[in-house]
Length: 227
Image (cartoon, rainbow, N blue to C red; front, side, top):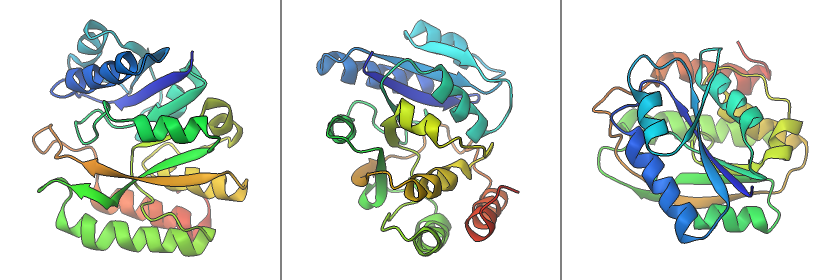
């Protein structure tokens, strides 16, 4: 199997079906042997049932947390390559051509860049767009000596073998920063692709906690360990 499209999930019944349909439309259009894998992080709604009904494979991840769901998904994926993204309709899973092309060309980490792409009105809060993301990304570039422009984009791809070799540990949102730091340290070939960020389709029920998650990213960037 060439590609796993991985989506971490926690109570996403409003949006998960559309995201899965987009992913399968990409696989079918490009005639790719692949799967859509849902890493369910303890959903209490109909997310898992909807995902199965739309043809996805669902694995239940025991440990709670965004990072833990992804780590579980990395292990369970069957594809040579993994492209991960949140199933809240922020990302268009039918337009992954650039990511797969870069992976096939030999890149070890393919990052989406929301800041250099297109952003729908209301897709990102003002404080994140002009304060949080730019500051933490700048600090990440200084800390890891990399040119990556958007440290916290949730749409990214990598060979499964390469991501497992990094032995990532973070159980929360800060896994995004740990992944980049570890990849830079191992001299992985990295590129960025400008993407379109769409408005979250969950009607304001985001799992992101600005202060807590921002602090965890900051702690990891400053001290190199999770808190």
